[in-house]
Image 1 (cartoon, helix red, strand yellow):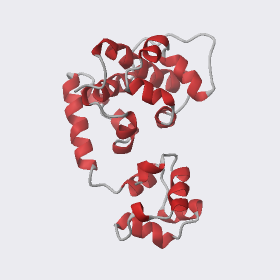
Image 2 (cartoon, one colour):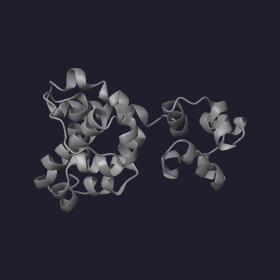
Image 3 (tube, helix red, strand yellow):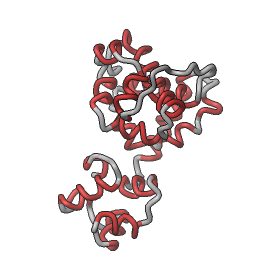
Image 4 (cartoon, rainbow, N blue to C red):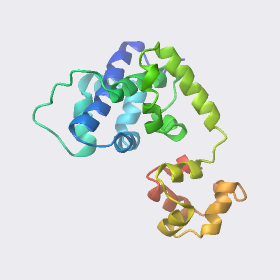
Length: 204
């Protein structure tokens, strides 16, 4: 069952596509940064749930302005559809089709790696993109989320230990499965979430 009525689908696709494109090419905000801000915002829930007031009432550029605190008086015309536009358009379709949250996709997928799928997938039917995402998520289900998040930010285990105040050996044990993060001290989980710019449940 899809996430919401398909009457909003194309508008939702264009909204996320424009959010990515405006952020990267107009506001000079890296894709991973705007993706993280979007995931942590109410806009993620509104778009993922088919909130017609948001989807039909705001543009992707307006959401980009709201998320970044930056704005321009006049948007430049972008002649060719960018890879970021394609990715936003395609991701919104995948989210709608599979009725999953954008937060779920952020936990399972690296947004910068998804962008590398532009060639050849932008020339293919969107179902091919969806099948590729399915395979990436399936492959990722056995990955330790703490290790994945740490590596996404380029931290070594020692650097993460220093940032969080958690003993290095404890972090190693969490990543190796010798200790369960589900039984970790609350202050450890909160420190990790702060250092890795995510929700505590993203780690657990």
